[in-house]
Length: 257
Image 1 (cartoon, one colour):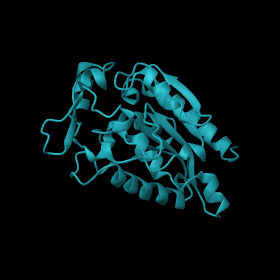
Image 2 (image 1 turned 135 degrees about the horizontal axis):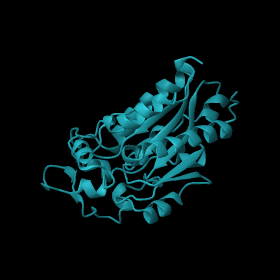
Image 3 (image 1 turned 135 degrees about the vertical axis):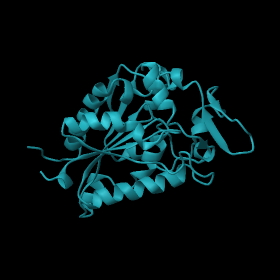
């Protein structure tokens, strides 16, 4: 199998997080022979006009190019990235493309402690209409939202050194990201998985369980890690993603030798 024929895992980061937040897990995946990419969202640290919909369009172009190249794609959405990935995969399902005589496509969508948001709702809607206590508006007039208490909220199960390294990479997030509505519900037409992060302090397990109820017959998997389990327990996350690949191929009718 050539590199271009290999299935590929595409990570969609959450708010405040740059693409290199997935470097650790991606390097370990490479050692298992698993190809991956991570999308840099234009909203993260970006100008105020970049929000959810800009993130969706940017991600969709990347995924479409991979699909046109014949890749079997597992989209792995983290946190806010759940809304981005849900919109970005629209029209790119493997089965849907095959029926149209097109190659490649998305064989599985994974929500990793991520928002599963009905069409028309926003992140703020899912949060009850207000910012969480650790979501900080430093200046009401500048249009940005900042994260705080990251050691506890995002990275509590990591060493102090690893925490500080991760925190140094965080960027401000335009409030527009949290105010633009979801545009698509791919769980009605594509294989779906929810990967629960059982020790999550940002979206506690009970919240994840409630969010996951929006999915239709999802594959489920649990890891014993924080909101950033891909940093603290990456091997567990990879085990879950290998299951996602297997289930996605089976549900998409792909024969694997």
